[in-house]
Image (cartoon, rainbow, N blue to C red; front, top):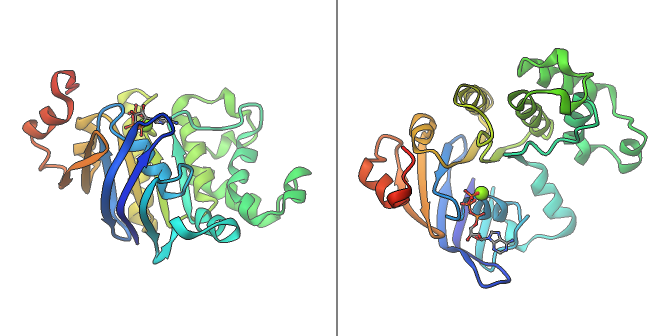
Length: 248
Ligand SMILES: Nc1ncnc2c1ncn2[C@@H]1O[C@H](COP(=O)(O)OP(=O)(O)OP(=O)(O)O)[C@@H](O)[C@H]1O
Ligand SMILES: [Mg+2]
């Protein structure tokens, strides 16, 4: 469903963040991308929906060349791609419900959104998603009154409003404690298994990556250095990835 062909990214200052990365991700896969800080994980995810513009290479999503699209057709592809961020990216002063509803903006006209008018079925769908993530009772609260784990659930509920085919999660648990991290990763795994949504999740801890990856892709200096099962991530590979800064 997703194919990268020799994708490279060189930022304006000359930093080579991705170096001819080629990958194929099948529908329904749960893929963890592991690598230490600066390896190129975020750049890779952001190239997929062109939040970052690749310098070279092609990206195909459901047989459409994303790298060749613009305007309306790019927006249509982005609509199928849910994003989840380390810092949740919620609007703190708005209610949980409104934050979740903003995930449906692709379907709501700008005018309706401006006057905060969302169709009844969107409101019901937002509540359903919140309840599914067990924070239905928080719908009316300000987003910034929630704990980190709860805020990330809101972030996931917002992504679900898009009815995404794929979820790109950029270090979704980097700001959370180990127990809460597992709760969030369990939720992503459930969405993957129950809804068949493909998940691409960046992590920097080998231990969590090994535990959750159905397929694990390890990156170093903008290149894929391992692509296989979680169990195949041997101490030797981890050593190569992290060197002396190894964290596990
Ligand atoms: N906007 C930018 N301009 C210039 N260089 C950048 C930019 N964004 C990222 N980089 C550089 O590109 C490389 C890859 O960065 P990226 O953020 O993709 O890594 P990462 O694996 O996500 O790291 P982290 O675990 O710290 O989030 C790094 O050397 C980084 O400094
Ligand atoms: Mg990153």
